[in-house]
Structure formats: structure tokens, C-alpha cells
Image (cartoon, rainbow, N blue to C red):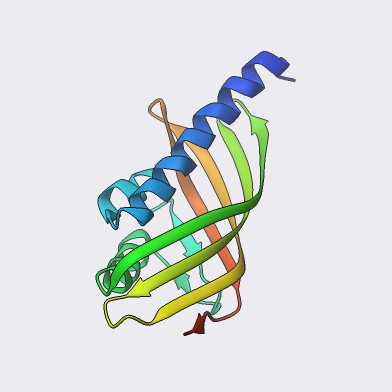
Length: 140
């Protein structure tokens, strides 16, 4: 069992990584947003549509979408960071997202969920598994 002080340090490190993901998405900077995801064959993602993606496909899908956005806003509604070991953390994240498309339309996800499995690799926290849950966005 890890001491509470070490658990708190790990939580803060992982929280910083999630914040960078949010900043990257909101600034439409996919390189920054995706720094948190492991670019190795260890990574996989399961999307809301039930598809299984490797890193490159996941990156390309998100880049293609954000290239059509003029603005993207994420709001955290709830977040839980659970330290499983000194090198393994699971994060449950409930959020709202609003994407403003270059056409002026907006895609709105009132509530979506994501689960991240972080592993410490070479002194960096990287997501090796990611799963999203949401209904399709409402387009306005």
C-alpha cells in the first residue's frame, strides 16, 4: 500500500496530463492533446460506436474532426483518479463538450464519459487504454 502523500503526488501528476489534454483540445492543438496517449502497440481505444482503434487511427479521426472546428470547449463535470499502483492509475471522467464547426454549426455533447488507464513509462504518465461513452452529439 502506497502512503497517502505518494498517492497525492501521483494524482496531481495524472491530473496535469489530463489538463494538458484539455488545453490541447481547446486550442485545437492535436499534438499537445495527444501527448498523453502512448504511441506504442500497447495503446488501444474503444469508441462510443463500439469500434476498436490503435493510436494512429484514433489520432487521425480526432485530427480530421478538429480540423473542421473553429472552437472546442471541454467542461469537466466529474472526475475520479484512482491510484492502483505506483505505475498504474485509472481515471473516470464525465464531461461536456461543445465543438463549434467552421460552418457555424455546433456539436454538443451534454454529458459524455471516458475512462483512461495510465501507466508510468520512462518516467512519463501515458494512457495505454482509453474508452469513451456518449450519445451522438446534438447538432445546432
